[in-house]
Image 1: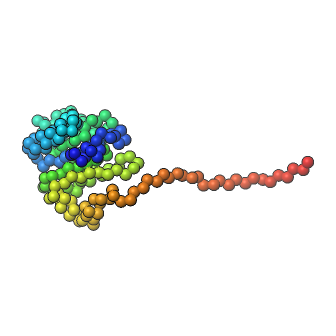
Image 2: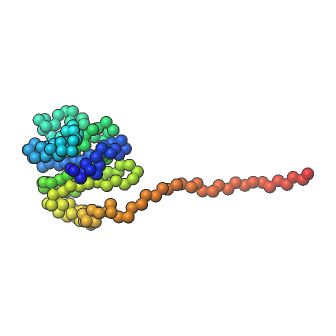
Image 3: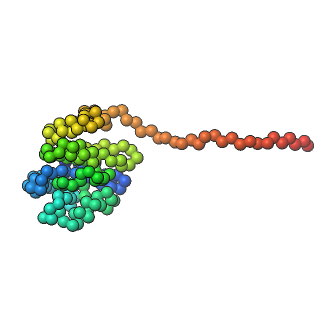
Length: 189
C-alpha cells in the first residue's frame, strides 16, 4: 500500500486517479483484516477514508451507491483509489485506471491469480505505464506457474522490465515530396 501510494499517489492519468484492487478471499477477511489494516495505513498517510470502495456482494458492506461508484471507477469524477473486492473484478472487468493489484491469500482457482494480475495491464496514456502487483509467496508461485503454462514466460522475465534502457522518441510524419509537371514556356522579347 505504501509503495503504491508513493509511486502513484494522486497523479492523474487521462484525468483519472490510479487505483489499487485488493482482492479478498471472503467477506469475513475483508471485515476483520483488510479494511482495518487499510484504514490504519491511510490514517498514517493522512489519506481520507472516502478513497476506499468495497464491492463484495454483501448488502451490509456494499451499498447501491458503492455499485454505482464501482461502475464509474474509470471516470474523471471517481475519487476512489483503493478497491476491495471479493468475487468481483474478475473476467471482463476493464478498468484502465487500475494501476495495481494485491493478492495475499491463495484463491480457489490458480487461473484467478493470472486473471487478477492482468487486470492492471490496460493501456492508458500514450506512454507505456508500469503496473504494480503485490503477491503473497504462494500467489507468486501460482502466477509464475500460470505464466509459464500459458505464455512460456516467468515472473522474472517481466519483473524488472522497467529497468531496461527505455528511451522516448518523438516521431514526426514527413509527407513525401510532391512532383508537379511544369510546362516550359519560352518568351522572346
